[in-house]
Image (cartoon, rainbow, N blue to C red):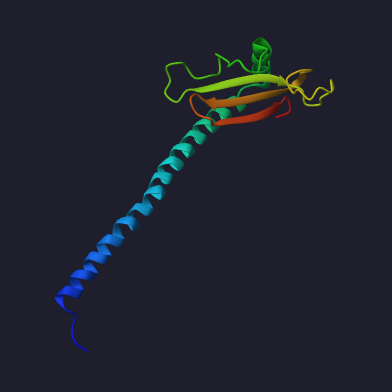
Length: 137
Protein backbone atom coordinates (compact mmCIF):
# COMPACT_ATOMS: atom_id res chain seq x y z
CA UNK A 1 0.00 0.00 0.00
CA UNK A 2 1.60 3.15 -1.19
CA UNK A 3 1.43 6.45 0.72
CA UNK A 4 -0.93 9.25 -0.21
CA UNK A 5 0.27 11.59 -2.90
CA UNK A 6 0.35 15.32 -2.45
CA UNK A 7 -2.53 15.73 -4.88
CA UNK A 8 -4.75 13.38 -2.89
CA UNK A 9 -3.97 15.27 0.33
CA UNK A 10 -4.67 18.59 -1.39
CA UNK A 11 -8.02 17.31 -2.74
CA UNK A 12 -8.97 16.04 0.73
CA UNK A 13 -8.17 19.44 2.30
CA UNK A 14 -10.22 21.28 -0.33
CA UNK A 15 -13.20 18.93 0.18
CA UNK A 16 -13.05 19.29 3.96
CA UNK A 17 -12.83 23.07 3.78
CA UNK A 18 -15.79 23.21 1.40
CA UNK A 19 -17.87 21.04 3.74
CA UNK A 20 -16.84 23.05 6.81
CA UNK A 21 -18.55 26.28 5.71
CA UNK A 22 -22.10 24.82 5.55
CA UNK A 23 -21.48 22.95 8.79
CA UNK A 24 -20.57 26.19 10.59
CA UNK A 25 -23.56 27.96 9.01
CA UNK A 26 -25.81 25.23 10.42
CA UNK A 27 -24.84 26.30 13.96
CA UNK A 28 -25.85 29.94 13.43
CA UNK A 29 -29.59 29.49 14.23
CA UNK A 30 -28.69 27.69 17.46
CA UNK A 31 -26.40 30.52 18.51
CA UNK A 32 -29.04 33.15 17.67
CA UNK A 33 -31.73 31.08 19.37
CA UNK A 34 -29.83 30.98 22.63
CA UNK A 35 -29.64 34.79 22.67
CA UNK A 36 -33.37 35.07 22.00
CA UNK A 37 -34.13 32.51 24.71
CA UNK A 38 -32.01 34.45 27.18
CA UNK A 39 -33.83 37.69 26.36
CA UNK A 40 -37.27 36.07 26.79
CA UNK A 41 -36.19 34.48 30.06
CA UNK A 42 -34.95 37.79 31.45
CA UNK A 43 -38.22 39.48 30.46
CA UNK A 44 -40.23 36.66 32.06
CA UNK A 45 -38.43 37.05 35.38
CA UNK A 46 -38.78 40.83 35.18
CA UNK A 47 -42.56 40.38 34.80
CA UNK A 48 -42.64 37.79 37.58
CA UNK A 49 -40.81 40.21 39.88
CA UNK A 50 -43.52 42.85 39.36
CA UNK A 51 -46.27 40.27 39.92
CA UNK A 52 -44.66 39.23 43.21
CA UNK A 53 -44.52 42.89 44.26
CA UNK A 54 -48.25 43.14 43.58
CA UNK A 55 -48.98 39.96 45.52
CA UNK A 56 -47.21 41.52 48.51
CA UNK A 57 -49.63 44.46 48.43
CA UNK A 58 -52.74 44.33 50.62
CA UNK A 59 -55.76 43.05 48.72
CA UNK A 60 -57.77 46.13 49.70
CA UNK A 61 -55.25 48.44 48.00
CA UNK A 62 -55.37 46.46 44.75
CA UNK A 63 -59.16 46.24 44.87
CA UNK A 64 -59.49 49.98 45.47
CA UNK A 65 -57.20 50.74 42.52
CA UNK A 66 -59.18 48.35 40.29
CA UNK A 67 -62.44 50.09 41.26
CA UNK A 68 -60.90 53.56 40.74
CA UNK A 69 -59.67 52.65 37.24
CA UNK A 70 -62.89 50.86 36.28
CA UNK A 71 -61.52 49.65 32.92
CA UNK A 72 -59.37 46.54 32.35
CA UNK A 73 -57.73 48.17 29.30
CA UNK A 74 -56.31 51.13 31.24
CA UNK A 75 -52.99 50.69 33.02
CA UNK A 76 -52.58 51.69 36.64
CA UNK A 77 -50.32 54.71 37.09
CA UNK A 78 -49.70 53.80 40.73
CA UNK A 79 -48.45 50.26 40.11
CA UNK A 80 -46.91 50.49 36.62
CA UNK A 81 -43.26 51.42 36.19
CA UNK A 82 -42.45 55.10 35.53
CA UNK A 83 -42.62 56.17 31.88
CA UNK A 84 -38.85 56.74 31.86
CA UNK A 85 -38.02 53.20 33.02
CA UNK A 86 -36.19 50.87 30.68
CA UNK A 87 -38.22 47.70 29.97
CA UNK A 88 -41.31 49.38 31.40
CA UNK A 89 -43.91 47.09 32.93
CA UNK A 90 -47.57 48.09 32.76
CA UNK A 91 -50.00 46.82 35.38
CA UNK A 92 -53.70 46.36 34.63
CA UNK A 93 -56.19 45.75 37.45
CA UNK A 94 -59.90 45.00 37.35
CA UNK A 95 -62.52 43.29 39.40
CA UNK A 96 -63.43 39.99 37.82
CA UNK A 97 -66.72 38.19 37.15
CA UNK A 98 -65.72 34.79 38.46
CA UNK A 99 -69.18 33.29 38.80
CA UNK A 100 -70.63 34.64 35.52
CA UNK A 101 -73.90 35.32 37.34
CA UNK A 102 -75.05 37.63 34.53
CA UNK A 103 -74.54 34.79 32.00
CA UNK A 104 -72.89 36.99 29.38
CA UNK A 105 -69.48 35.22 29.51
CA UNK A 106 -67.75 38.60 29.76
CA UNK A 107 -65.48 38.39 32.75
CA UNK A 108 -65.26 42.15 33.12
CA UNK A 109 -68.98 42.76 33.67
CA UNK A 110 -70.95 41.75 36.74
CA UNK A 111 -67.79 42.26 38.75
CA UNK A 112 -67.41 40.27 41.94
CA UNK A 113 -66.09 41.84 45.11
CA UNK A 114 -63.22 39.83 46.53
CA UNK A 115 -61.70 38.87 43.16
CA UNK A 116 -59.19 41.03 41.26
CA UNK A 117 -57.65 40.29 37.86
CA UNK A 118 -54.03 41.40 37.51
CA UNK A 119 -52.09 41.63 34.26
CA UNK A 120 -48.45 42.68 33.96
CA UNK A 121 -46.99 43.31 30.51
CA UNK A 122 -43.78 44.59 28.98
CA UNK A 123 -44.30 47.53 26.68
CA UNK A 124 -43.30 46.76 23.12
CA UNK A 125 -43.32 42.98 23.56
CA UNK A 126 -46.01 40.36 23.58
CA UNK A 127 -45.04 39.03 26.99
CA UNK A 128 -47.65 39.22 29.73
CA UNK A 129 -48.49 37.49 32.98
CA UNK A 130 -52.05 37.33 34.29
CA UNK A 131 -53.38 36.16 37.62
CA UNK A 132 -56.53 36.27 39.69
CA UNK A 133 -56.10 37.41 43.27
CA UNK A 134 -58.78 36.81 45.85
CA UNK A 135 -59.33 38.33 49.23
CA UNK A 136 -58.32 34.92 50.64
CA UNK A 137 -54.81 34.85 49.02
